[in-house]
Image (cartoon, rainbow, N blue to C red; front, side):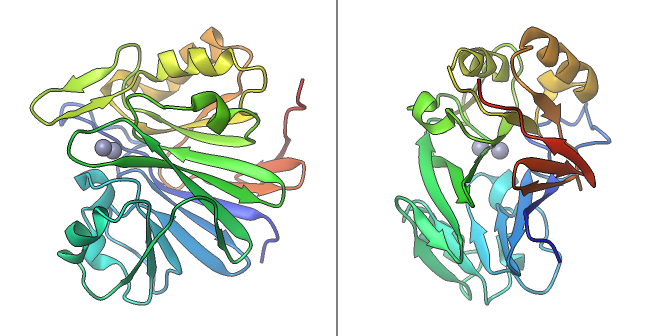
Length: 256
Ligand SMILES: [Zn+2]
Ligand SMILES: [Zn+2]
């Protein structure tokens, strides 16, 4: 039993063509957050494993995020940032309950606020900002442009950031969506007066192969930031003034 906020990364794969399969990123990007015996999952591109889920949050209606929605347990409350998601999801699973969330929404001690990003012409897309015990955390797997970036990311403790495209944005013409360059976004983030304290890369794409090497490159390019990569099954716990990585205690960087 833990008093902190636990984050288990289920998968870290984003848009990856068949030629590249990483050992670190085999499942679609998704995570589970647990606190006070509650369990919340973000996205359901992979088959749900387990028996009970309190909340499921959906970022957008792309297959890598909702492919296995039919496996969501019927007792789950599905939280959607846009009502346009409901008819599409109901076709896959009509047994769950949906709740539209706008603005900061309390969930048994954890609060979440969706924010819109530009990513696709066929589905609205959101990132999520979480508030828990004076700690702030952002989950942002897919984006092309992040409107209001400084307001959303300034001062957050932990940022999970999509890394589908490395130096240049990828424009999937014909599919109507675009993946923003993680390098360009990190450049803007490093210019913030109060950037996120810890940044974990998720939703890997071809440009991040091999993940370890590309992460070292980003760490060198942005020495002011604390950048880490993640992998399927990685666990992080946020607690007081430190966070735990696989049981190891790491103090949050002091704000400068
Ligand atoms: Zn995606
Ligand atoms: Zn997408």
